[in-house]
Image 1 (cartoon, rainbow, N blue to C red):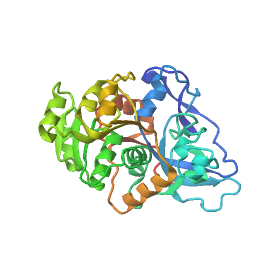
Image 2: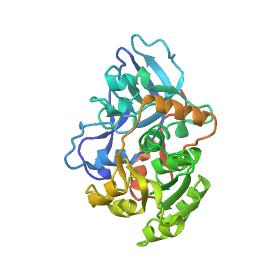
Image 3: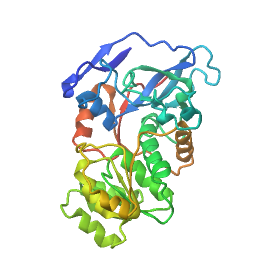
Image 4: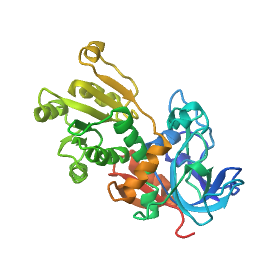
Length: 346
């Protein structure tokens, strides 16, 4: 099979295509013929490298995928060859205490497709059968390959970690990203008053169409004051963030009493500085979050099937143009997801 590979960390030149043996599913596994995959910021980290973190190089990147069941491993009885499926990108042991309680993202052996094992930027990928969901009939394959990681991340952040309640005010930063475009819809679905910040006028306009009541320029040096002018002294109940260092101070100052700062990444830098006193005087919470449980993804899939949530695909490129997709994501050009088409038909 043809696969995108990374042998060493660095720039776009580190993305190379190779011919590899077709993977063979083991017991309890399924081989998927990939129709489409999509880019996440995690793909950029895998390519560029993260100080202090080791990736299992060489690796095939790609966290998300949709396609067809191509071959069944021993013991798999609830899927058939030709079934149209979406791949859940998180992996765990499936049998420990946290896994059986539905918190598989807390499993000590948890990993992510394309980060801790070979991913979906290839003609075929092998995954555990439990990691498959039926493709929502409303979505074509590129859209179906564009919701699992981002919507699961956003859902877990807002529902499980920040416990957003109807009527609360939620500020979503970097609103043009895949995870934030999902968060806009989820927070609106939860009945929150949604505010958003983005770095360009087109992205701010798109955020309004996804449920934001008011938008702000995230590049403004007065962002905090501009948000405060709208929400008043009370502040916001939840800040949804994955920018990190550049926005952390402003986010903490904007929180209401009992407010929650929830984040899943730190694209601008990893250092967190704050004054402890407001944290306990104002009962603030800082909540880290990574992925979510498989049961949450099944709920999201059903909401997409019902038309209540919708993955936002900015553009679809062929897998052969993966480097161009990386460049566009890195430059912040996309609103929502960049999908990569791998195959046209089963």
